[in-house]
Length: 116
Length: 112
Image (cartoon, rainbow over all chains, first blue to last red; front, top):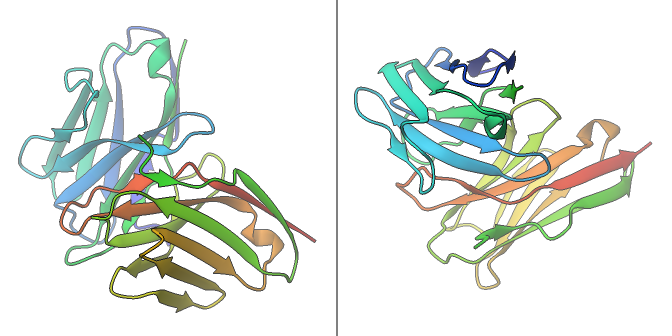
């Protein structure tokens, strides 16, 4: 069964709107979660690493003021796309690992964001 | 700079035969490798992983082979089933970084 839940699965909104996406680890505590973005027919690109109780670590080229990440608890990380524009339209996916060692990341089902 | 490459964008295989998906990497610091399967509009599903201390890992119909000298890994699926039709991504990381670098994916189609 799913170990990471992501909500919503699909969002359509007007340009200028801020959109919040939630990522929850189910039945385990995730001190670290990850946010990815995938453009059509391209690879998953890591946007940021979300750390519980501290600031997120953003990858080069990702605007931290545009993509706000909050990891307020051990089972929840949120990504807010602020003042979204059509170029922000994409597939956003979060992931989390079970604690300890080399554990694979488990992914949510993603959020399809379409900005009109 | 694409550190992880999957040079075949697509592959078609007859049901019951072997599917071989390939992945090459350039960063010699990578020591943990994974394969994921992805259906449209869903997140990737973990299939199998391998650490650089091994050259083979097997789980049911799935086997991953790692050739460190060639910086190459492959996923073998045998026998292939129509339900295996999906996009397969390889990923690589360095221990302790938790950061995965994904390949561009290979679309596998298993023909009944």
